[in-house]
Image 1 (tube, rainbow, N blue to C red):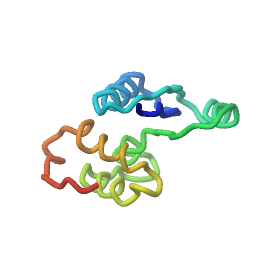
Image 2: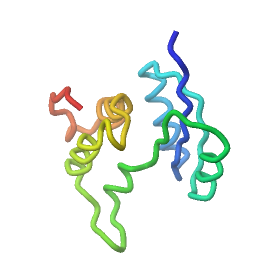
Image 3: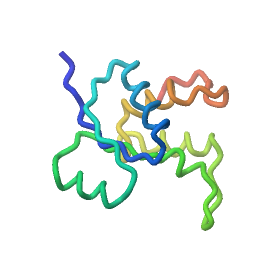
Length: 114
């Protein structure tokens, strides 16, 4: 039987959080989660208990225009996520994210390596 992952989901969009959880469920990844949307609450949750994984809206942060920097293109963000797979991002979650969450034709390259 698959172990349940305890996930701290750091996301300011409830719809995005629901999409992430739905895609994890479709991938048959069992999760127990806590949804938070700010740094103060994140710190409280990290102090309160141990989490197997923390998922932040990194892709959105990478591709969004900020007053202090331009957003990355979709291709640049995917390259960065792949580069950080196994370091900053869990490889299994990266695989699900790239194959099932990002369904735009830009990402349908046939590349099965993550």
